[in-house]
Image 1 (cartoon, rainbow, N blue to C red):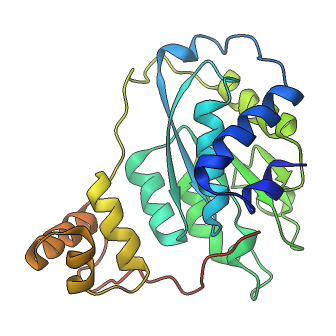
Image 2 (cartoon, helix red, strand yellow; image 1 turned 30 degrees about the vertical axis):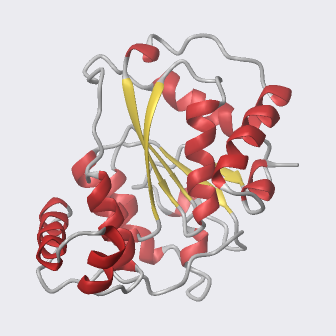
Length: 238
């Protein structure tokens, strides 16, 4: 069983144990990654599938495979992901862009996000029929393209390659998320189309507080005041 298959079948708590057991059966703990364990590395996971995002986060933090400590953020919106890359400056981006392009059959909509990555290593997860051709986009640095049917060994090997190649001398020993936990909750419901009253009731806060959170989110993500980050497509389970 590969990591993507059971990521679609189990809840987050169950997934942690399964990812841990599956990983230990496939991969031995690698050698230290150039002292990365002294630092907190930021990883951004972009995928429309909720279970992939939470599954990768659980695996990175609980597998015991990596000497580094990770702060993982997961997003299912390309525009928000682009701003996250620009503002948060992750050390690695892991993205399934194919799930966003089921109807366009083209990587052109991802051009702003790929450009925002700049020198940030990018691992693409292959889930669709559109094949990414690195030669056709020489400006975008894609470290690897990994099938979602690949083993945990292959995924971990690619992540280790990125960590070994990175210089972490200027990396702080601690890291903070771009958004606070409460802001992330507001953003999640906002993206689902919930109004201020519904968000306030769900989180047990005042409606004016929701407005304040939205204003802070817009400022942090450099959104226009009239922008509403609703998803154009529903989430997927791969």
